[in-house]
Length: 69
Image (cartoon, rainbow, N blue to C red; front, top):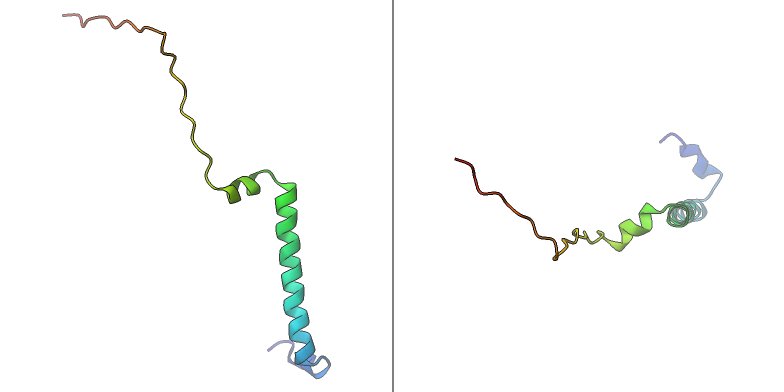
């Protein structure tokens, strides 16, 4: 372990909860910042956007020419 001597200065009963608390707070802060400063993430969390089909006008008549021989 690289920082093994750290536990000689800081008790593990204090250092581990402090470290895990810092990770939780920073994770919450990052997610909050993404939710409030982006437009795509809230849409992603809502789920897939419904695909709207293009409306075909019903009053338009399309004439098809008969095939030429």
